[in-house]
Amino acid sequence: CRTSRSHFGSSTWCPDSQGSSREAAMGIDIGRAGGRIRKSGRKTCKSDNPYMRLLTKLFKFLARRTDSNFNKAIHKRLIAPRRIRAPLSLSRLAKFMTGKDGKVGVLVATVTDDVRLIECPKMSVCALHFTERARARIKKAGGECITLDQLALRAPKGSGCVLLRGPTKARKAERYFGKAPGVPNSTTRPYVRSKGRKFEKARGRRKSRGYKV
Image (cartoon, rainbow, N blue to C red; front, top):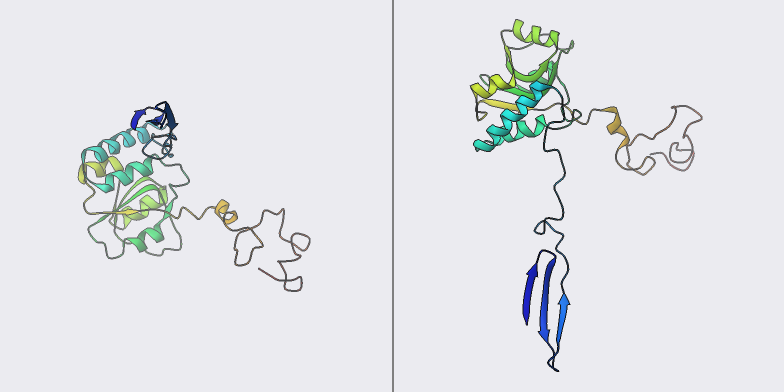
């Protein structure tokens, strides 16, 4: 038997007992090896902001030319959609930076103020954007607010940095995702007009009507 390979697959030619030839066609490899299934996900920055585009270009270069996973993570988050770049409050930032003196907290998102935080500790923070009050409180405490391009000059490989991220699942839309509403042990919120006596209060929503989830 003889096997021939081409772009569309491989075929095998075998002579039968009468001397004639028959050809058995093989299937097309649609796995990763064949290249038919392409990787999904963004490859470039969709923003029109020139600062974002320059940052993406900078960290794409650093991710390619260094062996640092830190730069790869920053580049991936820069090209991610806005829902992935969830803001982080000062209280959470202070909690995450506890016991990390001398390190820089890095966030590819916005740092916002939190009035529930009585005293803001001294810390160095690098982020895409700071709200006016958050920047003022960090600087008043003796800390510093730097940008990602300044961080690239200071720590090209991300040494002495703590990579942080905001709560990406805190959006209201996330409450409607998951197991179907009404299924046992489901905490998914149903799509209803209102929450009241007349809206989805029958079986599955009250103990007196079969069961309550």
